[in-house]
Image (cartoon, rainbow, N blue to C red):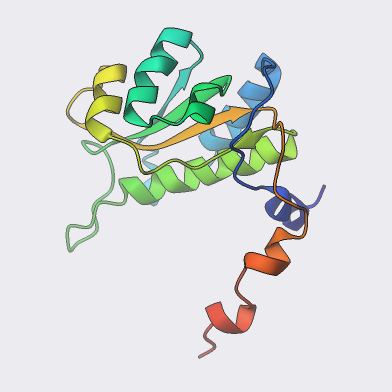
Length: 171
């Protein structure tokens, strides 16, 4: 499958089959994050792979949605602000770097027939506590992952996406 096909296939999945994700596929998804670019190549992210039922229930406290609790795996991307690159005006690029890695994950998962959903609206304090993160490590995004039980219609990008004219400015 070509890149644009994968990008168009990827969608937010909020219903997962009760099927385990093969380790080989999980490792391929994690490898996609590993090779993601980052500012000054500092790679300030860490990915916490959560498969344990009890720990998933603790993360559920940070994002209490029933469908979330049923995901076979939850990947939590964290950024280490002690090592992330800071621009001359102080902007910390760790969040950007983690977002790039997360995007690599979502696209790799889609290519392998897996579904993900980008979760940013979670309780950071509860997530941090569940994962016992040190102060310099911030959870940025949670990605529940598994085999989709259902997905959006394949033509959703034609319906919901802005046109190029709306998002591109030529200079």
